Image (cartoon, rainbow, N blue to C red; front, side):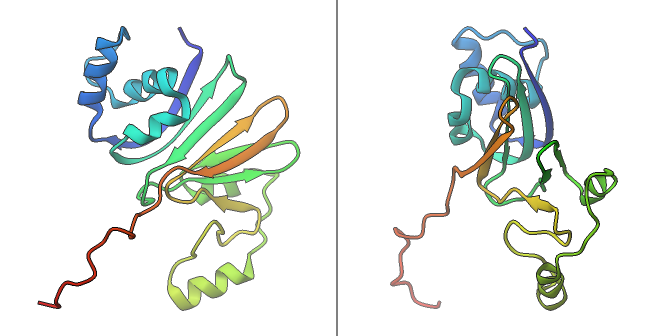
Length: 172
């Protein structure tokens, strides 16, 4: 009904199984095997809880016209990148830094702590990027951006569990 729109980078490995369940629940699809369309229908059914069902590598943003919000997420281990910029008047996102740096509102000022990490570790850990104005959505996190209030909230939806790992294995 065009009340939800999506931009999506990735692949949902279990989309055929999710699709069959959604069809059984009464959803109708316009495509034969689009994992992108599966994401939209799953969002309509479960909102944020949709993330619990996804198996794949992804970064996506859904525009929900009825709720006047953007909802986006990044896969559990961060295979697909997701960068964003937010100030009082603008919220922008991209899968590449150069797309955001091209925006006039985004400063090209370096984050020297991130530069240090890059020069010593060969990557920048956490939410920071090499540019001070641009952040990264962490792996296993989602965000909600209220278009009316311009409020951004970021939450974790997945964390690697290590509490049940077997620690008494031999090196062999």
